[in-house]
Length: 189
Image (cartoon, rainbow, N blue to C red; front, side, top):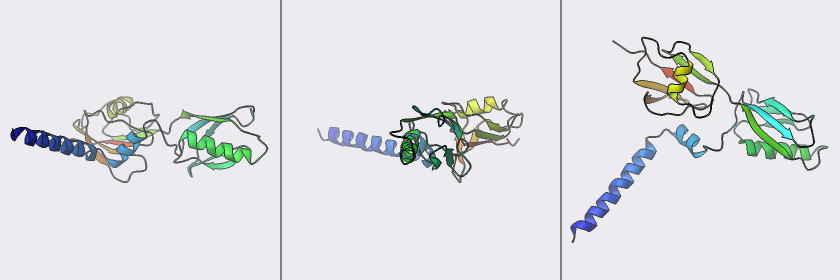
């Protein structure tokens, strides 16, 4: 009878340790992106489509500049980097309501995501347009595939805004996000 409580307690301890290890093995930048999976934060070179109902002159596409601002007619320069589309909608509506627009109804969608970058042992390194749901292997395919010198077992990934590269096995289904830098290393014979 005493064996059962210890085995259940041991199993619970094992599961808690396994869960803690699984959470800590995901890099902090990736955890932030995963936590905000439905809440993409805007950044420089993202292009937004703004619709202000009843105000055709304000509606249109706007690019977020390198300082993180979007210049909107009658609203001015609005800080957009680091905000979600919903937060930016509220900021623009607040700025417009101070001017001549009465009770502005604002809608924002992302027209074009900022690009990701891939370099190293791929056939065509450079800047590529982001597509929702991309993995590292999709990014390699977009860059023309591997060169004959490529180390096809690992990849280095630096998240947008991050300072360090994380190493991943190339066959892991790691998602790519706008602004990420992917580096395919050279293999040593």
